[in-house]
Image (cartoon, rainbow, N blue to C red; front, side, top):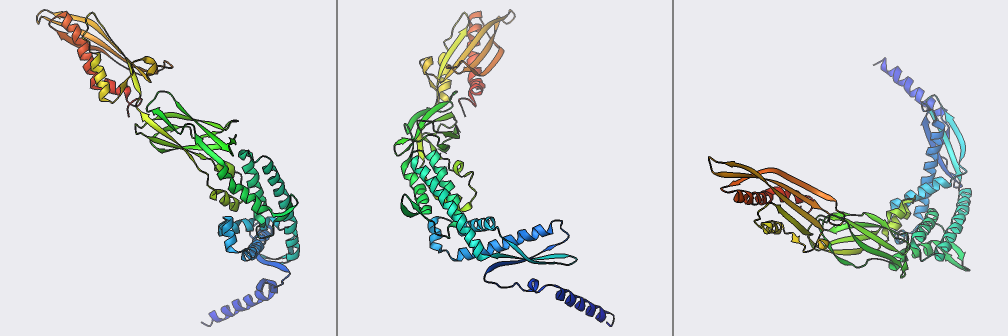
Length: 442
């Protein structure tokens, strides 16, 4: 115990000596109503400790400024702007940091381990600087507003102008944003915001027509037309997104309106036989906000709703044209057995090739076999070829074959007829389903 007491006394004296060595401003932040102040410290074991200390001071003072500004703004006004508290504070902190130009290092101190710095910012100089920056932002925003009014019928160009104006003004929402505009003093922020919020009422998205017949499992694409109007005039260059609301299939995910405000939706494939089905077309708002940097402005843009357009699809299954042939000297006339098999799959037949979405070719070739005198029995063989084609392009979509299917009977004629009968049975027993599955059938 006697050995421990001197050691403790030595530590206490060392601590007191260290505290006495520290400047008074390290122990207690000086209060000066003329300045924003920040006392920071950094370990000297970091190579760039002085730069880190200045960055920390910059953040601390920016927080003081944003907190003071936030306290001066009425909450209901902030809600009217559509800006959440945390997003607005984030914007203020970022803008405060960017606006601080005259941060002064009032004093510094360092010992063996730490670097201490006392930074100050003159409040009057800072606020005067913000006024200058605000005035520049107001002038630029007013110019953007003029450009918007000149092309208000072109939302693809106009919307980015308004969003850019809001980005300029977002740093100064706590300040007066009134400027002489067309010889009248107006609040530029309110003017920009009101124009932006008025766009959805004038912008019309529609499918033409809004309901159409479509076929599931088609070999080729189907198309639907849409258009976008702004105050009854074509709106070119507008990005949209397409989404399946009900049903199942593959469609073009996005498109941009052409010079006439028209858009083409590509329905690549309808996989479901459900009817009706519905596809929506919505404005691609993310394409306008991709370059926005201020969370507050993004939040305002997200809060603006545009009405979507809907396309209703009356879906029916595709029609098949059957090209059936049994190549032999004798015929059984079993084509209708294939027709009946297609009906079990709920597939319709087309009377004409030009009315069909698929061409089904069935070729059965009969080949002579052997005569077995001991049994007085004739054998025969059949080759089956099934082809599914796109009748418009002639492209082969699927192909199956079965060779040397063996049949037989008591006479050569009956043996040859048996080839067709057994071949049709084999087709019905799985070959037809395998040919159509994944293309026509689910």
